[in-house]
Structure formats: structure tokens, C-alpha cells
Length: 542
Image (cartoon, rainbow, N blue to C red):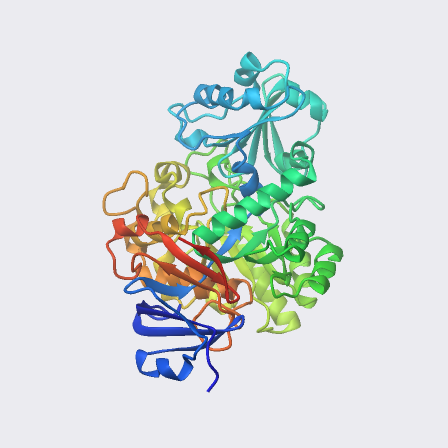
């Protein structure tokens, strides 16, 4: 009998699927799991040199996997020279907060703020450059919205970028203008994405620091793998720094498995090059990412019927990419064996993408080694819930989005359509696989907040609304944890590598001080990770 290098014991072990835990141990040999079972088999795997760690009644489970985040931006938001404000209640408060970081930034460099959501302000109207100009007339300022889909600039910042009244709208984006045609300073979707390459220009050592610090944060939460998603639909600006990851791996600093999803573009040059180069064990690229629409709060999500509070007659938002162009891109990716993951928030965006996925499968065949997903899936047409399963599509969702602004959703879509917002219970009941993540830095990368939100449909900050928002869509704790382990591994085409505790899979394991499957909902938020292992190596221990 092969003896283990390490044995992890607990009275509560969760395999990553199913609703039950068991008492026993996980045996690790090298970078793989050797055995998972009850205590009666322990002596078979314990030798003279085997290290045994007894975690008592703490929960052993597969390493968590954030199925959708943006590592570059997450690292940026953690920089002390960036002002992140998630709870501001007015435009003026956002501007005032910049004073905390302004002295740290040279006047010729970008002063960066982030996290604002105008729908949560006392006056829920979009900001303008005027409030920034009043305080910062002679230095460039950029403020990134909480959902990262809108940029708010001052006049100096627009001048630095060469924007004026003659700047045309960018396809797939919009520049807000006043009644005279002057830009107000607010840039939506592709228009905002086009700004980022120039604003986020930092020295290599600063960017390396972003990533290294973020890896440590992930490990402290028990996160052992991630899907780093393209930030932008604009070619060449996906902000996937595979060069940084590769350098970290070479230097032994990469402590999280990374699945990279570059932008889906015509020709597929970068995705195919990355796929050939990155096939594990720490860096992978087997798919692509794109955007079909925007966000409901700015009426850029694409709907079948007009918004309840339409800005103009026929206001249904619009696709970020022309539907026929997206169709061709999806067909090309499927033909070339690339999994496709697409940002879809509005019900019509979801509907069209299901059409395209089903057409690709009909034309080029079902390919079980691919996993197409839809990302976010906020608002459904009822019949499309069943189509997810029929099209072999996985639902990749971020539970904190559910309770960020329920009142704003009801205002935008009306009470009837709100009943089909983030319908986790119905998604699972239709047999569709569910993966969880955070979309960090849009929300905190803390997985316990996500699990709490999915189980209660309540804000982790306020506990409201009492009983949960659209409570019929709550799911069980084990379902939420499974979505964060097995489900997210499936989203990355990696369930044969990790995501469950089973022999021959990678020893990606974490231990929590609370039993997430059985504790009270409030205790989920009090949970801490006490141990994280990636490939048999301990990367965090509390």
C-alpha cells in the first residue's frame, strides 16, 4: 500500500458534490489526492514519515474556485493610492473621498477612484465632469463605476486622452453629452473600455505587486483556482497578463491555478497562441470571453421589452456587438475547439446567445470537452431557463450582485420581470450546472459573502430585505458550496483535475473553521479559512 505524505483528518469532510459530509481523512501523495475515506482505512495510508494534521470538527473541502474575476483590476483596487468607495450616497461624497489619496499621486498622473453606483445615491442620476472640475481643475481624474462598465472623467482627464465634442461614439459604447453636444465626462461600455489602456499604465514592478498581493488574498480565503476573464470587448485590451503569471510561476510565486479567457476576436490569433502555450498545471487557456450587452443600471443591458423606466420610447438597451457578428464569432470558436464565455445580463442577450450556442452545436457537433457558459444571467425569458440545459450551457453567476440594488432592479425592469432575476433555484431545478464567483473587483472576492447571498438572498451588510429578495430562488448551503467547488471547476473544463475530493485529482484543499453546510446563515459570514493547499503544497495556514 502506498503511504501518504500528508493526511488531513476531520469529522466533517465535504467531497464537493452532494449534500452530506462524513468523518474521515484525505490522504495526499505528491501533488495528488491518494485516498478519501472513513477513519477505518487510516492505517493503510499512514507510514513512518507521514505527517498527520487533525482539524477536529472543522470542515475540509475542495479548494474554492472563483469562476469569474478580473485579477488586474482586483490588484489595482487594493493599491493604497486608489480610492475605493462602495457606500457613498452622493456624487459630492465620491469627489470628496479622493482627498484621501490625492497627496499620494503626482499631479501629472491619474488620480483614480472606484466603486461608485449612482443608482444607490440619494439623487440617482449620473454624475458629470463639473463636480470633479470644481475640485481638480488641473490634474487628470478618472472614477470607475462599481460595475466597471462606466468611466467618469474630469475635463483635464478628457483633454489628456484627446476627447472633445468632436469625438465620435465608439461602436458598442456611448459618450454622454449635454444639450450643446459637449461630453459630460461619462463614458459607457466600449467607450469606457477604450480609456483603460492609457489610464492603467503602471511600471512592471507595480503590476507584479498587484498580482502577488492578490494571490495571497485568494489563498487566505481558501481559493485555489480562478478564471481570469477578459475585461473588455476591445481587441488588445483584455488585461490578461499572462506574462506576469508565467513569471510568477517560474519564480514559484503562483499559488493559485489560473484559467485565462482572452477576448473572442476574429482570427482567434491570441486565444490560439495562448492555448498552445498554457496547458497547466498552473496556467491554462482553453477558451475565450466576450460581451453581448452591458448593465441594467445604465440601460445598456439588452432586453426584449423596453425598460420599465425607459429613457425614451423603445428603450431596450442594445447589444455590445452586432448579433450577426457575435454569431460568427461563436461559430468560429466552437469550430476551433474553444469554450466560449459571454457576458449576458439582459433577457434578449441571453436569448440570442442560446440561439448561437445551439446553432454552433448543430453545425459542428456536441463537443463534451468544451464548456460554453453565460456570465451573470440576470434576467430571463421564462422558456430560456430550460434552454440552458438543452444547449449544454453552464450558468456562471455572482451572488453578491443579487442584493447590490434590488430597488434599482425593480425600478428598471418592473416587479414582474424582477421575479426572474438571478433565478438560482430554477436554474438548478432545470438541471443546469451552476458556477459561482464574484466578478472581483465589482464585489469583494470574499467567498463567504457570496455563499451567504445565495443562501439568504439578503445583503451581508444590512441583512435586508428580511426574508430575502425573491426568496423562492434561495438555494441550500451545500448547493452554494458545490457551485464554488465542483461547479466552478466545470466552468473551467477542469472537473477532471480538481473541484472534488477524489483520488488522482490535484490536492487542492481548504479547511474552514465553520461547517458551511450546517451552520446558521449569520455564521457563514463569520467563517474563516484556516488552511489552504494547492497541489499538495501548503500556501496558507492560519
